[in-house]
Image (cartoon, rainbow, N blue to C red; front, top):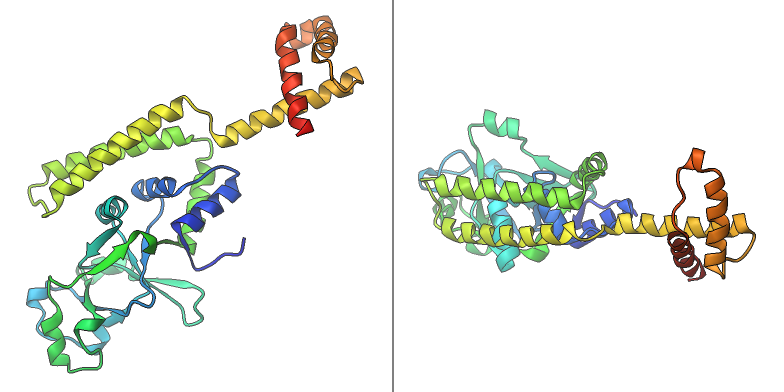
Length: 305
């Protein structure tokens, strides 16, 4: 699959499914986001969003230079906003700390600034100025009046994307954790959510939507616990495919050894069991005739299909 500068969540899930021969869905990607394994961005290409770069609060901004006005293609979506978007299909965002743009060839994505640069710049953030609220080429003195806490832009669920470079990094992280089942990842997510809820409840400087966010997190926590219980009683698609292939190999080897088509699986099973019994010192005690016959029968059915 050819790489692109960014992927929708649906496209990213499909790519991971192909890469790892497993089933990945959007909620799996959200889990990775909230486990800090990958960053989530909103695609705002074509929305004509402009941002004022400043290390001051909107109330303290008295003048603006043109070089402080930034355009953007992608904006990061933080945990709290992800929860709101997945619950209500959108979130309202009033400032961002990082941005990303396509390069002039519209291929590579450039992120800026880095966390280290933000620290050096003294907590610079970017406040949105909506295109329909001012003339970008208008009078600079008028722009300062439009930097207010009331300015926000809306991010919808369908706007969410993962950047190419981040998706490649996620693939490598998944490869390292390939022996970690989704069940284990769900348990990690449950613990992360419990910690997040605990931190929010203990935060005295609560945001206006804190109670709503906590309620959403509790709901997601309950859903994850239910999913985890279900996963404990199910087999992953990847493991099931491996088991199916093993059954096919057993049936094929049975046909080769008995020199028959194994259309009579119990007769083939008895032949194999007798030889297995003769080599019990090397192979251990043989499985029962019924067990061997069932594997042969299932494998032959799969090979025919």
